[in-house]
Length: 305
Image (cartoon, rainbow, N blue to C red; front, side, top):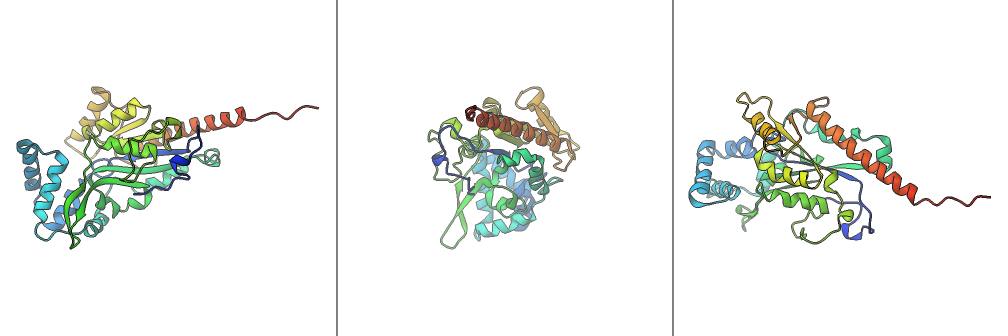
């Protein structure tokens, strides 16, 4: 989970900023057309999908559980008595499938930056924030291409079997991890509430792009909008019911949460790629102008003769 910045945020000189653009992604229905547990966990352990979610929804409706805690409890119940280890869950992550263009897009996006951007040290970083299981993403083909993954986690008992939720990320708590990325405080023990001047934060919100798929991403969309960040809502173009598209349409046409929506196609030349590339270039050009201004304004002309 650790990202190694060029310098610890606490050691950055006053008034300085790093030169990083952060692309942050939801996972389920954003990077993949499938829900990760439905795709690899339930088939592997013989769990009936409809019955699983019926039990989880009942806990929410009848017992007042939070959505994420409900599904984690039902999962532990279904996997009893011989529960898997976190390593076994991680191994299942290798079976995850993604939308077209992934994972190649992560590396290809680096080519969007022009030589003058790179000369000034401007770079891209990628992050995933999910209410799904972190271990599955850690074992997926995406993991080598992203700087950090945040997701729900289980602790293990003395036999190395998962036994209790260690970390739960819901749609409202996702925003905490945007602040962690913003401040460079990626470790669980880092107190994200510690004060840090905005001009010392490794990835300002204005240099951040959030990609999500629907209502569960509304808190993150709202935060991006409030602090001058960028956001795109994506939908599954293969969804013949159009429910995926309608979720995004509502976000832009009625709820006014995002400016842009696009099909979940990450291949070069797609509508989504064009949007992301233009956003990255716009941010990078702004950073370049600021850096050049700082250099010029700090330059003292040599005395004339």
